[in-house]
Structures are given as C-alpha cells and as structure tokens.
Image (cartoon, rainbow, N blue to C red):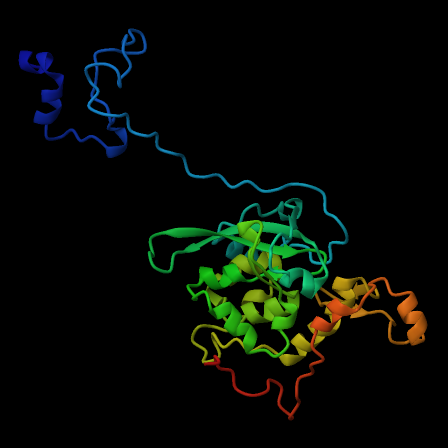
Length: 331
C-alpha cells in the first residue's frame, strides 16, 4: 500500500522510485492533468493554466513513397528484371527495393521542360516514358543513416538516369561529366535534363553504356541495380579491390554501337529490333535497300536534318588493343 504522501503527490512517487523509468517517446510535451477522455478539460492545453508558450508542432510521420501507376506507352524494350532466383532475390532484399514485383506497373511520363535544349537536340524527343523504383543505401558521411535513391530508365529507348548512382556512392557533382569526357563520343549521346521534375534531372545515358559504366564503380550497390541491369550484373562489376575500380573508360565498341543506334532510334528512322536480353538495338536491312538521295529526302520522316548533325562521325581507333589508351581524368 502506498504511503499517504505518494497518494497526495503521484508525480513525486514516480521520481522517488528508482526502478521506474519513462521512455522519451512516452513523455508528453504538455504536463499531466487530472482530466481524461471521460472527464475532458474545458480548456485546451494551449489556452489553460498549463500553457507556457506556443504549442509544439506535431511530429511528422516518415514520408511515404508514392509510385505512379499506369499503362505503358509504346514498346517495352527494356523491362525490369523481377523473376529472379533465390540468390538474386536475397541481394535485392538487402537494399529494400520498392515496389519490387510491381516495377512494371510504375509507368511514368516525364516531359522535358528546360531553357537548355540539350535533351531535345540530342534525342529529338520531347519526353521520356520511364519505369521507376527506389532502394536504400548507407549514407557516405553518416554510416548509421540510410538514404533512399530513385532509379529511372526509359523503357522505350533505354536511356538510364545515371546521376543518382554517382551521388549515392559519394562522388562529387563534376564526376559524371568528367566520366563522359573519358569516352569519346559518349557525351554527344548522353543528354542532360536540367529542368522540370527534380527526380529526372541529370545525365541520361544509353542503356548498354550505362550498364558498362555502372559496372566500373557500383560494386557496393550492385544488388540494388539487379532490377534494371539483370541478375548477372553483380558478377560483371569491378570489385573495389581491383585497380580498375573507379576507372570510367568503357569499351569503345559499346559507345560506337550506341552512336549508330541513336539516330534511327530517337529520330524515327528505320525501326530497330531487340537482340537477346537487353542486347541493344540493331538496324533491320536499312543499309541493304538504299534509295536515291532524292527519294531518301522526299520520304524522310524527320524533315530538316539539322538535329542529326549533333551526332559526331566518330569511330574508335583500333591499335590491336581492346580498350584503347589509359583512362584518366582530364585536368
């Protein structure tokens, strides 16, 4: 039985008993009152004798992630990889990928709005049709914190937003641009979006180039990229222990093929066909049946050829080696 002093002063009983501890989450910002739900107080806490200043703002709940659901527009040439073996599933779950199993339903239309015409000039496109998912990765500066990152890619033409991958792994803002400069011709087919939706801003690289580039530095988050690049991607990544890790030169033939694909793919030329699993686009006999220059111009679906001139007539030099010269960041 509690002593009379405890009955007269319940708060004192709590303070005097060393075995009772109040959890911070259970402590209220307003003092306790003798009122309850059955006998409510006639005054609100910020009006009565218990108020000592403005009320504390309510604590906001963790922000929920909302994905855009809809129907795809055009061919799905680059679908997400969601039917995986147990090992790949375990790798994906480490990064809490959302909404895994329903990524194909997260269709999103991203219009291009910017004063800079880089995207439109390089692709001839006015918007992107994308799939989207998120994953969680450890913060580079605060190890006990996790950040959520978004993956976006155009399922029609295969452009992949790569800027977020560099940010996720702690690279500076200038590294994406500098990595493009190491690969002749790649920057000319990697448009940059600077306006419109924040989540879509940054560099958008052709699919096979993006996959090869990410394999150079994304070893730590390779499991998170399985839904976009496939279950074999972690095995293709350069490990951190390798001297090749973080060197952004990719196979010049991949860039050369992407340049060949870019004009008919973006500008509505001869229709491409997929070869293999995300193997890229290959032209269908468009070189076998050439028309005369006059007829070719008459039947051209593009009109004035000015945008096409933005693509360089570049081919990698082959000196007997597969990868060309050494990679370095230009000064």
